[in-house]
Each structure stands twice: as C-alpha cells, then as structure tokens.
Image 1 (tube, rainbow, N blue to C red):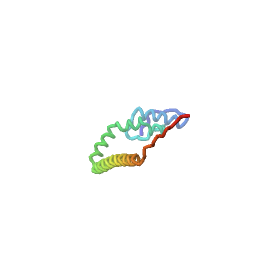
Image 2 (cartoon, one colour):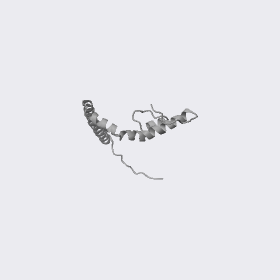
Image 3 (tube, rainbow, N blue to C red):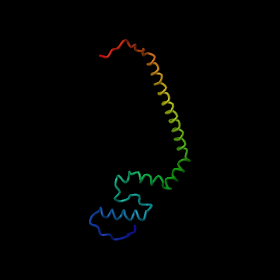
Image 4 (cartoon, rainbow, N blue to C red):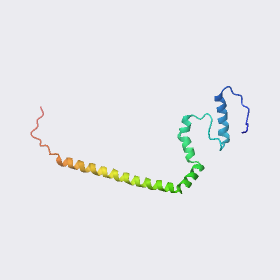
Length: 117
C-alpha cells in the first residue's frame, strides 16, 4: 500500500470521501470496494451499463458463449420460447372456439312492438 497524501479530516466520512476521490482518479484494478458508494449507486443503471459495456465483460461473454454449458442453456431457452409461442397460440385458439360455441348457443332476441312513454 502506498500513501498518496496526508489528509487532515475530522471524521470517517470525510476520509472515505477523499479516498473515493483518489479511487475515481486513479481507477485501480485491484480495489473493487469503492468507499462511500451508496446502495443506489451500486444498483444504478449507469454502473450496470458501464460494466456491461466494459471490455472485460465483453471478453467474458465471448469466452462463455464457447462453453458447452452455454450452448445447452441456449438450446433450452429456444425450446421454452417455442413452447411459449405454441401455448400462446393454443390458448388464443381455444378462446376463439369457446366464443364461437357461446355465440351459437345465443338465440336472437325478437323485438315486439316497443313503445316509449
């Protein structure tokens, strides 16, 4: 560990703020815990998008896509998607059949001399 500066502070929060300044400025690769980061920052879209667009993640994706486990998951996903589409079509078809049957059972209403008073 290298001391970058002697910074006078009155509490821990100030110290973490200054440490975060240096972490953001130097962008170390070994220190994953950034001091002073809130839960909102950890879960924010910006952080997620930054990670997803990083070269490290893209390289991981390329390597993972070549594994047999990945290919197995892709195959399972495609099967579930096709079965979902079939179920969607089946239930829509079934609903139409039910509506047609109900329509056949309904008798037309006869209107007999109706007067408004």
